[in-house]
Amino acid sequence: MGSITFPKLLVVDFTNANLKPGSSSWSTICNDIRVALENHGCFIALYDGVSPNLQESVFLAADELFDLPIEMKIKNIVEKPYHGYVGQMPIVPLHEGLGIDYATELKGAQSFTDLMWPNGNQSFCETSMLFSRAVAKLDHMVVKMLFESYGLEKKDSDSHIDSTTYLLRYLKYRAPEMNETTMAFPSHTDKSFLTILHQNHISGLEIKARNEEWITVEFPPKSFVVMAGDACKAWSNNRVLSPNHKVTLDHKGKETRYTIALFSFLAKPVKVPDEFVDAEHPLQFKPFDHVDLLNFYITENGRKSQDILKDFCGI
Image (cartoon, rainbow, N blue to C red; front, side):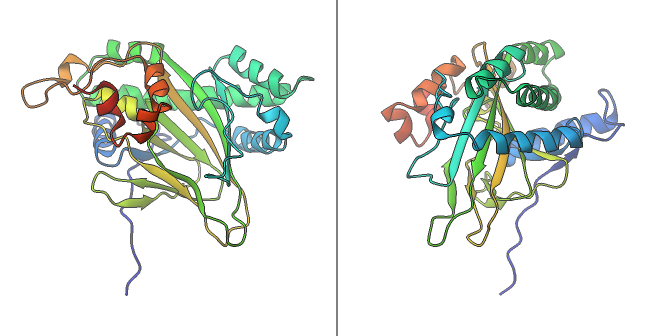
């Protein structure tokens, strides 16, 4: 039998100096990004907004953070579901995660740092905030290109960006021990508008495309995976795919996998634009507050749901 080949995800080179609004390459990439998000729910971005020094620093920060004693990490409590510490769970024994809400703002990064290191750790605070701000710029660009590809006006994307807040999550997946599960995190969809992932050299991410095929994601150097969440799917009136994805590790692997993830959330209601509704595309979702989707997700009905948007805000 021949070896299995997986379909390739779209790769967008944001380091291209000619990729500027109004250019023919810009319009082409806008369309490519829309198609990729509709069919795969994600694409790979080559992005140099995070310098090599900052990239090295953020993974060193991850090491430092996860080396803290458990009694410190569990202090990461956030009212919003899945924004704080997640770990020590028998169903996902390989996984730990901590979150910094409002990570692009000094107050958010500082309050988290002060909680973890009462005696101070300014380097961690600055690294986390600088990384979040750098990746948020990529998020802004993708939002502008997605909105433009759908024919929406600049004021619409500007309003969206102005209403966006960011959650930075440090995610750790330790190598499985002998006879231990390799499922580091089970299949799920994100509740964000967009998620941007940056990993170290250990792979493991798999996404499920619209055609039901699982794709193993490889991260080229300087790359980020941009993924649509459930809020983006709702906003697009079901055009964009919020893909199921999971993390599976190599049972022979010996190294820890780190992922640094930036999740975007809207402080204003998530609402389908009027331009997305017509006779062929009837309105599918009612407007909702983003945090209410998170709160529904942790209810019994939310956990059991096979179609969370339909059950939460479907028409």
